Length: 201
Image 1 (cartoon, rainbow, N blue to C red):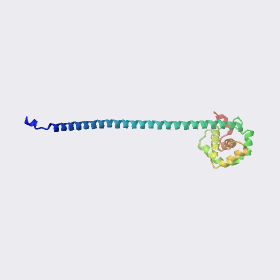
Image 2: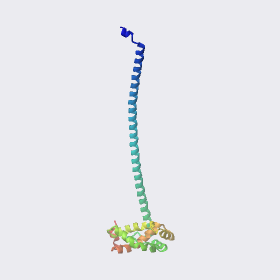
Image 3: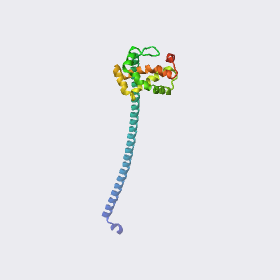
Image 4: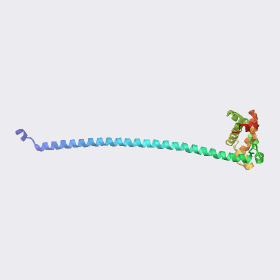
């Protein structure tokens, strides 16, 4: 009895209060830390989600860019084809093998395009041959495409002047040149211009 009587209950109360406070504080910290872990995980999940969305956006952007480029190229080719057909009707007869009409011969004479292209004939023949045409019709089509590209070579200025002299576009004057040298190119490849019709699709 004396032992319990000698205990300072006020001190015990203070100690208990401190212990309760410490336990409460520790519990609070544990809960906070646990919640922070959840928050951190959620932030990580959000970051991962944003990364996934960014990846999807980048892929979609890349796909769209590719589709736009392909559509633009296809449209350019179609427009080029239409303009080429219009120019062909303007400077040549519709019969096959294709030959220059009166206007085409006029462009040929006024432009002086033959003298500009002739030095390149050997190179043109070599390029046509490298493409391994199987018949005269294929030679004709390849030749017109190859001659068309001469506007992007060192002949550019001369070709533009030739077009200006004859009052037609660069593309038209090059079509005239292509038709003009076609028979020469075919002969150098041991093919007959009269056989073009036989292979026309």
